[in-house]
Amino acid sequence: MNINKHKPKEILNKMIKNITAILGVLAAVTSLSLGDSAPEASAQDTKKMVQNNFVETAQKGIKLSGYVDAGYSYNFTGASSGTSDVSGRFGSDTAAKGDFNLYAVKIALEKALTSENKAQAGFRTDVMIGEDANYLINRGTTYNQTNDNQDSNALFLEQAYVSIRAPVGNGWDFKVGKFVSILGYEVIERPANMNVTYGLLWQQMPLYYTGVLSSYKFDDYLDAKLGVVNGSQTDNNTTTGLNGDGCAVLAALNVTAPGGNANWSNNFQYSSNNDNNTASAFVNESSTSTAVENGSNGTGYTFIYNSWGNWAPKFADDKLLFAFNALLGTSSTNAEPSQPGTTWFGAGAYAKYQFNDWFSLCSRGEYLGGNNPAKVTDNYNNQNLSLWEYTLTAGFNVIDNLLIRAEYRLDWGTNSVNNLNTGVDNTPAGSSGPAHYAGAEVVYSF
Image 1: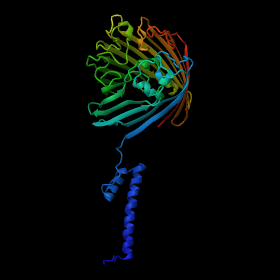
Image 2 (image 1 turned 45 degrees about the vertical axis):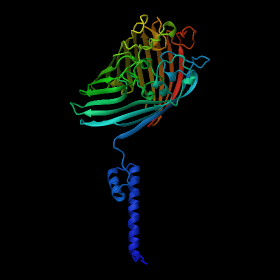
Image 3 (image 1 turned 60 degrees about the vertical axis):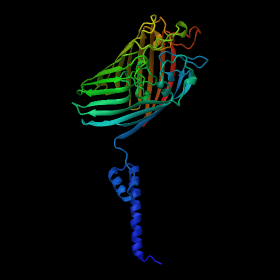
Image 4 (image 1 turned 90 degrees about the horizontal axis):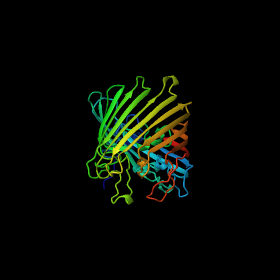
């Protein structure tokens, strides 16, 4: 029988050596988990000690961000059936009477391109969950919406694209995949806008595209964008004309003033077919043997021009901000002889004053007009579109990363409140308002 004849001192040294190695592995893993300043060296040491069982560091430069946005809204206009159809308002802003809202939980994962002018690549993915996501998936019209349509369980993929930089000139950047619209002063993220509710013009802007978008910065004062996409709000190459191979061309030119305190952006979109985000040109089935909606016979075109700008006067020490937003669009449907193409136009003005580090006041006034109300309802008739809104928003930055806002909004105009139904061909029997709204929002960003 063989007996282990190692001396006690040798056995003790071997045990100490093994324990030291184990502690080294645990230290390396802990260092990686806590974000040590030199994780690569720790990972290499760990790999040497435990061979294939090692912790691999995450790729550098990838950042996770987002926010949670919740609040309360009260529409003073509403029917007993639980509808509050105010033309031009976003779906989650139209719940009748009082309603607690989970507007959105947003998560963004991004590896942004650096400032270096060299060949490089990155990505960005944005996901939203909540009541806003429910309507962002299929914004459509808000006519005859009920409180039952408010659903906070919806999931909306806002963006998912690969970003590439070609070292040409000052650096030529590309986005390939799904990305947000280049048009409009307001954006999909409520907390990034001056006001809680979305504006009339934002409701008429495209939300997102799938395709390719390139951008180039000529100097500190001039940059441009050019892209080719499927069309607004669609993942296929047909837009709404199912008989054609539709696409859209995007272009933008942005001018920044010397000093960086003002800029002017001009944005264009031309769709080779009718666009998912333009005139409905709705035809009632009772008036024709074949219902034609959104010009689905594959003919027509859509053109949209948007101009916006902002200015922060230097004499106000960055406390005062003015902005404007303008829109002109036209769509030729050729769907029915009795339904000519739709033209819509509008303008908005914004102002914000930052009284101190924690309190600000924002104001917005907008007008939206057109040759028929199909832009905001699911009905086409021989009546012009004329809507107005005014919004006043108070913001409170009381704690780091926490924003609290209170808002009052007033909407009015031709048939601006369509909370009743005549029962004849589903034609709305609306009033000119006014429609009052009051709400509050709490946002935590990370």
